[in-house]
Image (cartoon, rainbow, N blue to C red; front, side, top):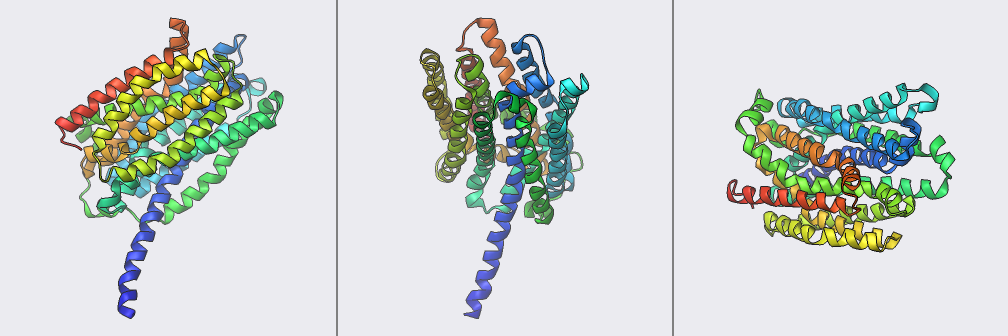
Length: 428
């Protein structure tokens, strides 16, 4: 009995250590996507509080532009925090990232509106979003590498898929706030204080993540490796092809992700569907991402990741235009929910193997820098400005189907990158 106990205890302790590391990584990622989703979902209200204009469309455009501009600093955060993680450790970078994120969230939560302090208000919101963007720049690469380097080889795909499942969970929480606040409060209450509630919730969640990240062990793989002295230079000079491939495989995922976040505003301004119905649709989409992604992540331990992602991209190209066409022909809460659910389901299948694939593109000495840069460059170019691009395409073409054109182009680019990853990098 004593021999059995002595052999079981280390295994149990190792399992406990792995899942503590996973939770430490995921809680910050959940907070990041919760904050992102809340800002996007409440863009209509935020536009009135901080960007008032005679034309509501101009106010909404300014709110989404601020959302998009904040993504421009994410590559800088990726370069700084990513190289810091590759030189000093994943744990230190994760702790710094969540502290910066909390600071930005606090600024948004307490910022007085334009009516109270004038032009300082929108400038303050922009600065807060820039701070959050810088923080988020290092979050994905650090947290994904941290989880995967703690996990046994046979469970790495599954553990990495939890990264994106946590994004779905952040969407779920944000959507619940959006739905209950917009159905329980009137317009004036939402303008006065309702939109601030979820940001204050984020300030409660953040310190929990900070505590856990401070108490977890550093990644074993990082401790056993010899950190490079200049990981950023190595990625930009010697690993440019790897960087472009990692960016490319992410394009359709990030474009669809931010298009889903745009749907409550699209439903309200373009389809005349109540905004609360948009939140219900995104809530359903978030649940699908949270639940389906780990299942597909487990399956990819036995089936080719590239094949799964290629088929998901092809289905997306074939389905997205008919879906938007039908939604505009039969605009209703039900049709909106079905279209968003379809987008989320295809995205979850594509999403699940993505984090592990991106991590395998780069060697351990530059893994966080490479993942952080590729992720944030792609998110900045193809994701952060997706709502602005969608709004602009609708205005430019006069077609309410224009968002589907953008998503088809994004899927085609990702298919190209997947083929390169398969044939030249020999990834499967």
